[in-house]
Length: 223
Image (cartoon, rainbow, N blue to C red; front, side, top):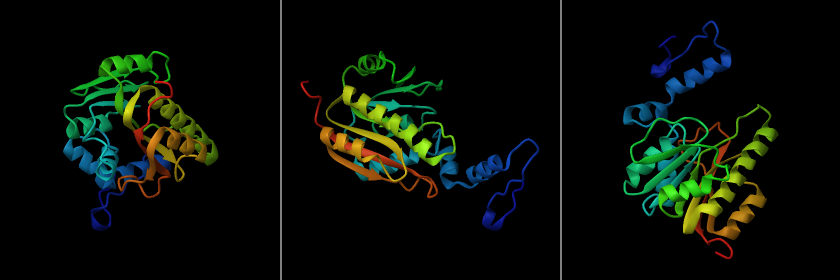
């Protein structure tokens, strides 16, 4: 590995057994100010700053009392919730194992499991008022396929939020390629008072990710 480069930029030589793509990823990580900042401030991932920036714009965390973090791994978003809303009950769920976070209840379980809504509601001692999802489907390198797979995940997360949110609650989810599909936006507008898209500064400029932010849940029909 080389530490040379203009302006202190770290340049990485391709090592035996490391692909050029892996080398580029490593070089980007080493030079990413958000990665450096996350390490210095104790956050598990640079994604923490995406939620901090979304919160600054939309005021998501101050009123939060019960929060669900879908796809919690590695835990950066829940760390932010604990920092900004220390009195909130926080529950995370992920298929992957996640190291404990003080004040957060973590389930290693698919959020689509039929038991998940009841488990999370019971752990929160009531319906959620904020559901967060920074999930994205594993990419295959084909933009249309990747978009469809991620949007299916977003739609499932939105349906899940509709089951677990209290009236007035909010839903935040990662989407791709400029925002949620029109059909999903239409459904969210039916369920929420406000639906907007945002690309926080911490989201890399070359990334296709955006976030949909739905606030003011109107409640389940017939509830």
